Structure formats: structure tokens, C-alpha cells
Amino acid sequence: MTALITGATAGIGKATAQIFAEQGFNLIITGRRAERLAELKAELEQKFNTKILVLCFDVRDKISVENAIKSLPENWQNIDILINNAGLAVGLNHVQDGEIDDWERMIDTNIKGLLYVTRTVSPLMIARGGGHIVNICSIAGKEVYENGNVYCATKHAVDALSKAMRVDMLKHNIRVTNICPGAVETEFSLVRFKNDAERAKQPYIGIEPLTAEDIAKTIFFVISQPKHVCINDLTIMPTAQANGSTFYRM
Ligand code: NDP
Ligand code: 8X3
Image (tube, rainbow, N blue to C red; front, side, top):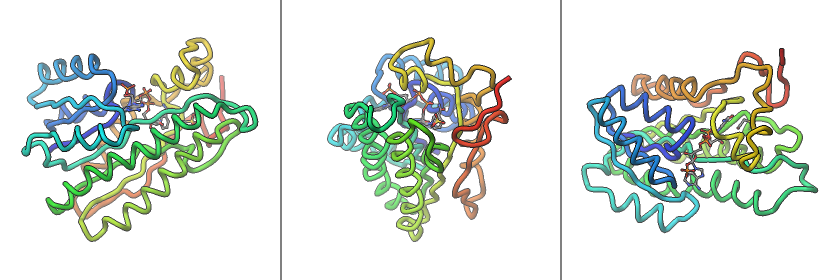
């Protein structure tokens, strides 16, 4: 089995690569930070009996996405599982104070990037008669919260696209799963707060957040179901988080 994971240089994508490699999957790991991808490949190939292929590209660049995936050797084009994970939040402001560059980064990465990758990989799955696409959405794709505006809108788009893909790809035997986590402690908050490490810790103060491994295990559970079972939509939260904006902090 071969899986392609976008955003494997950190957080949920990296943890997913670790679990999949442990389970013997061949992996195509992608992201923009080439050094981290090379390190992860070396680590996983040394630890586990698996093959790892690195593709370094920015999901926002549709030509790079197409060229990278089309450059895959023929045996690596047999992609069984696509994990559309690469994504980010940048900034946390009211709409009237928002930075337009931040909005564009989120829209270009979370919506357009996911579409470019899906547009390139799904025909390969169709040609082989099936596959499984897992879109990493968010609780922000189910609800909105103060200051979340554009990030929430991008994840609502992912939620809609998961439903739409499920319909369009039904006759091609492609399962589509939408996974919606609450707060997961990764590099996400550091990116959202533009490398302000102190500010980045705040969302996790007084709660036990989810870990990247929690989500990776959930992804593995979803893709391990028998062929006739599709988990369409899964929301997973820290016990101390009730919804997009309600936390119980000790
Ligand atoms: P991290 O910041 O730890 O990891 C994000 C990954 O996305 C990195 O590997 C990064 O790789 C990749 N990425 C970002 N932008 C691009 C780009 N333009 N092109 C290619 N790769 C890119 O965050 P998480 O692991 O937490 O986030 C993963 C997904 O989970 C995101 O879609 C996020 O929205 C979602 N999510 C996160 C939650 C959380 O609380 N952490 C909760 C709910 C959903 P590189 O920088 O090397 O390109
Ligand atoms: C990330 C979770 O609650 O910060 O998608 O939007 S949240």
C-alpha cells in the first residue's frame, strides 16, 4: 500500500508518516522544508521496513504540484491513500482588522492547495479503480469563533469539498473522510502567531490538548476499516474542549 501525505514536515502529517511507516506502508512525504523531509525519510527507512519517497513542493503552486506528482516513477503512482493535511492558520483578528496577506495565504493553502493535490492524485486512483482520500479539516470547519473568520471559512470549504468529493468519486470506489480536530499542540499555533513563542503557548494553558499522535492514530483507524466501510466525518476534541470556543481551563 502507498500513501501520499501532504505537510509531513511537522505536526499531524509527520506523526501520520511515523504510524504509517511502522505499519509497513510505502510513503510519499511532501512539504516545503526539504531538509526535514530528508531527515524523516532517513529515520523511517532506518527504523522500519518501508520505502519513502520525498517530494518537495508548495501546495499553493499548481505547476509544482502537477510536476512533482507527474514526476513520480510509475510504481509510485499507485497511490492508495491521500492525506490532504498541509494547512495553516495565520493571524487571529476581527475581520475589520485582518491582514489581507494572511487571508490569501490561508485561502491559497487550505482550499486551493488541497484542490490542486486532489485534482492531480484522484485521476491516478480512478485509473486503478479505487482509493481513500482523508481531508484534515477542523472544528473550525463546523463552527465559527471570534477572530477565526477566514481560517474558519477555509475549513468550512474543506468540509464542503469533502462532501462534494464523496459524491463525485462515489462511482470510482474512492472513500472520502473528513477529520475535524479541536486543539492539537503542534507548530500550528507558532505559525498562527507568526513565531511569537509566548503567544503560541496560550491556547494550551490549563488544558491537555490533543497530540499529533492522537490524530495520526485516528487517521490510521479510519483507513484501516474494511473496504465496504467509509467513515465520512469524524470530530475529535480534547476532553477539556466542548466546541470551537469553549474550554475548561484548570
Ligand atoms: P503544523 O504547522 O505542525 O504542520 C503543518 C504542515 O503543513 C507542515 O508540514 C507544513 O510543511 C505544511 N504546509 C503548510 N503550508 C504549506 C504549503 N504552502 N505547501 C506545502 N506544505 C505546507 O500544523 P498541524 O500539524 O497542526 O496542521 C496540519 C493540519 O491540521 C492543517 O490543515 C491544520 O489546519 C489542521 N488542524 C490543526 C489543528 C491544530 O490545533 N493543530 C486542529 C484542527 C486542524 P512546510 O512548512 O514544510 O511546507
Ligand atoms: C485548528 C483548531 O480551534 O484553533 O483548526 O481552529 S482551532
